[in-house]
Amino acid sequence: MHHAVIQYTCLLAIILFVVMLAQKIKIAYPILLVLVGLPLGFVPFLRGIEIDPQFIFVIFLPPLLYEAAWNTSWKDFWKWRRVISSFAFPVVILTSCVVAFISAALIPGFTLATGFLLGGIISPPDAVSASAILKNIKVPQRFVTIVEGESLMNDASSLVVFRFALAAVLTGTFVFKTAAIDFVLVIVMGVLIGVAVGAMFYAIHRWMPTTTNMDVLLTFITPYAMYMLAEEFHFSGVLAVVSGGLFLSYRRHEFLSHRSRLQGINVWEAVAFVLNGIVFILIGLEFPVIIKNLGRDGFINALNYSLIITGVLIVARFICTYGATVVTMLMSHIITVADPAPGWRAPALLGWTGMRGVVSLAAALSIPLALKTGQAFPNRDMILFITFTVILVTLVFQGLTLSAVVRWVNMPDPDLAIPLDQQRQLMRRKLATLSLKILDEDYAEHTLNNEMVKSLKMRYSADMALLNDWDKGGIEERVEEFYKDYRTITARLLNEQRALLLTLNKKDNISDELVKHQFELLDLEEEKLRQFFEAG
Image (tube, rainbow, N blue to C red; front, top):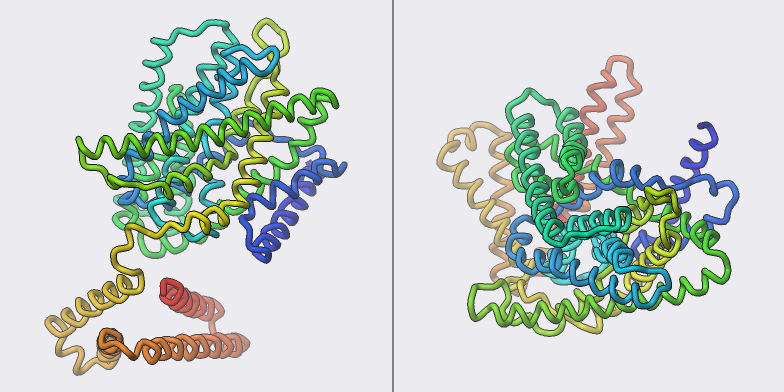
């Protein structure tokens, strides 16, 4: 136990260093973590660290999926629901079929059931990988929504394919009609359970006397409750977490206080960062073990098969993206679609974002060592090696080259009818107008007699004056200079106030708790300042 604690402490230190290096050289940290994990797998001190697939499914997967769903825009998700659904279900099933037939024909000892097992494992792109990589790349928002939404939803369909294929290998039987009915049932019931559990936690948050810490803790219990309840009844735990997460995310302002939202965001960002880091570096750590199990001759054959199947996956995804474009154009004559003419750029980008990750890893490692007869599970090491190779190649190769593909495609944002800076000015104007109207109509006397309310009105009036100057044109640089000066002066005042608080805290007659509370208020003020100008 003592040795394991030291191992994981060192691993966390390595993760921190690698992420700092990734930020320095400006690449997505999952890519660098996987690459660093490869040589670390040969370090004797770290060899004892192994991946328990159930540990990943139960401990890692629910919070990671929930965090991704929580940060997904429901408005954009619903707008692109048809595209997301087509990639989440038909495309995953089609990809699984292609992988099944090709691997069964290519790899000695592979049956069609084993091929479907492999297809179910490697068919879904990873939500965590996609989100981490796209954060560093400037692409249209619709593209981000589709990729992240697809990655969230397709995990469920791929794991259902994996579950049925695994049962077919273990039992030697497969009934298509039964499997098709179960497939629909698993998906529908997974969604219903997720929404039902989400509604229960919504009621707890809203009508029970919770504190900020209780609210944050409840958000951690929520994804596990969704996942475990769905899995207990053999439905899709992944879809339960995703659907429940989207349900609660859309209503967060109804049941969470401002403090709960602020604290929850900070805590969840830190937790997701740690979990992502551990998962991706463990992918690299585990790969040398798989290579060792294959032996030298088996490694060369497995590498050839893996590269072929990876190429098949990449080509199949391009075919599916352009096929979906053709279907969308045809359907636009029958129903209203979000974009009747997608063009070639969006499918090209979407085709290059098939990075695999944690779900494929966990599914592959969950394959049992032996059949019910006691015989070794057929081609288990080969399936593991192919899965790890697909993850490495798609994550590293496609992840590193995605920014170059984005520049080559040069896709404008078709949804940006009004530039972001104009949208921002419009939003500020409406907020300032509303505030001034309320102050003038309902608090006119306060604005005359209450100095604090008067300063509040002056702040909104000053903001409105600057916005009016901006609309006149030709003085944008002067307005920007005003905002720059405001930020510099405010930051200086906050720093000086912190220094004064530290001095005051040395006096015996000043409460330490009071000083801490004042520090929190200053931190909130600085966070507001940062958010205001980062949005700009």
